[in-house]
Image (cartoon, rainbow, N blue to C red; front, side):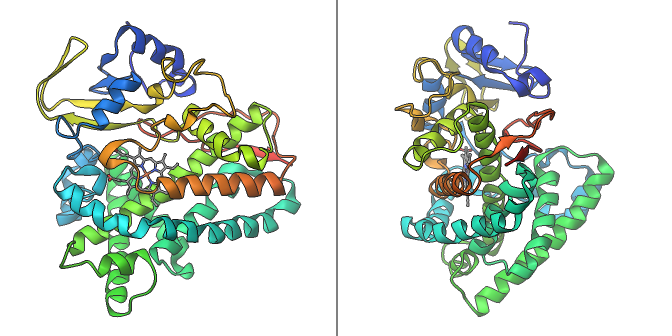
Length: 397
Ligand code: HEM
């Protein structure tokens, strides 16, 4: 097979599915030179690997800080290994302890209580935008309600939201995508400002607790968590909550408009959002390290190798989802996709993500039933190894 798993290539970003189907059939364990990783593409293999954290380790799997220059590392000091105790980045027993703490904030009751707030944020936004008749869905509609909800969940005061948002964007860039040296230093400065802010927020909640995530995690310092872990957990929620849901919503709206399925009748919203997550998932997969020498489908994976579990391919596996490239609004088993992962690292925010997606589709469908794509635009997904999202989507109504 001459093609590679090249997430930088236009064809791969636009439509990798014929290629992934060939991999599933002929090379279910594929060594990608481009990624420097083995890629698992069959549903059963991806699921089995997620379910076997002893052999497929998460330790350090997200740490891109390897690409930082010495100067940037010096500037960051002890923070150079930020995210090293990120919950998605560690194995048991640390994972079990961190996960137990973070889960306390995501009880079904706490998640359900966020629905009204999220609905109101969407209604407020549409009150402002609806008279205009057009917008960039991604930058003007998709992000704001999720970003505001996440900030309130954490306990960031409204007056600080814009400040936090701009610094969070900077540190995502610093730690999650390779940057040129000069830019790294700039981003590192911004990151230190962000850390200082979170430190002050934690100190304020230690003195005067409120009903928010920061207060709950701060109350566990000393017993279950260290100060640094609390700062990282807050950052984790910003990472998980700020971008993935808006990306999934943008992908979902594009799919529904293209399939002539807008607005979705309320009884079909839950199923439609699962099918959209399956067919255009905002996450493409997860990385793991082989914790031992492994052999799968006759291919040797040496200990220490990086392995990509391609949930995007798994979601298009014809043995699980018949006619996988076709959008079926009420596909009976659509929710078996693994866009939220699977196993011990299964997305802690999955219920909240689903709730936001359904609520947004319901409110948007009711308020903007005539939504359509603006003519003459070029629509292309961002280049990314692990995420799928649109930089822009022009719509009219
Ligand atoms: C549609 C939206 C979302 C998608 C597609 C998504 C996807 C994922 C995936 C694939 C994982 C597993 C990572 C792995 O196994 O390596 C994960 C874990 C995680 N997600 Fe999400 N997520 C979403 C929304 C959220 C939200 C709203 C939050 C928080 C408010 C969140 C917080 C987390 C956290 C903390 C983890 C780590 C869990 C662990 O390692 O135990 N996510 N997410």
